[in-house]
Structure formats: C-alpha cells, structure tokens
Length: 168
Image (cartoon, rainbow, N blue to C red; front, side):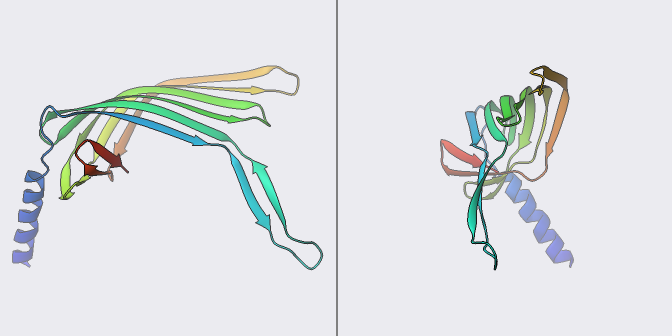
C-alpha cells in the first residue's frame, strides 16, 4: 500500500511539472450560441387517431462572449471576460437580456499530450433586465444587478494544434 501511495504522489508531482503552459502565452476566446427555440416531436398513433408531428415554439436563446487570457506564470492563467445573453419568446412577448464582465484564474495540469485539467475560479459583475408585454400593451420591466462568482472544479481543455483549443 505504501509503494502505491509513493508511486501515485510521484506521478501527481510529475504531471504538475509537465503542464508546461509558458509565462507570457496569450489567447482570445470567442463564444457564440444560438437556439431557435423550435421543437418537433411525433405523437404516436393510437387505435382512434393517426400519428402526427407537432411543432412547438419555445424560448429562443442567444449568447455571445469574448475572453482574453494571459499566463502570468507557468501553469497559471489570468482571464478577463465579457458576455451578453438574450432569451426571448415571441408568442409571450417576453425578453431577458444579461451582460456580465469579470476576471478569472485557472491552473493547468497536463493529463495527456494536448489534454489538460483546468480548474478555475471566476468573479465578476452582472446586469439582467427582463421585460414582458402585457395584454394591455403595457410593458412590465425588471432589472437586477450584482456580483457573481463561479467555481469550475471540473474543467478540461483539448489542444489539437498549438494555436487552437476546445474547452469543456
């Protein structure tokens, strides 16, 4: 048991040593997401009715985000980010918009060639507004703002080539 523990500690220490993200490396990340909010499903037939396909309009989602990363020391990345999100429903005439800005830190541990474990911590400030058109054509409006924090205990990065990476 003692030998296994020593081997695991040694491998863990080596993995930190091999996580060579060099000081001074920089990157820019762009994130775009869109969901049209349409769902199609098939209602199976029964003894009394034939099957039919229904289309349902759900809420539409849009996200745009930009981040800038800089390795301040080997293994440690500093991140600055901006994001905008929109969620709307045309039928209900509702919309929610949010904007956030923040900073983050991530530590890189190499798991395999071009594959990294990157736990992180982010903090920032966000503003959310929501409006809905009522049946009387009046607009009901709500605005929230405040600090936000995010812990990413399970974050992974894959770099298939030197200048491109994918994060989960």
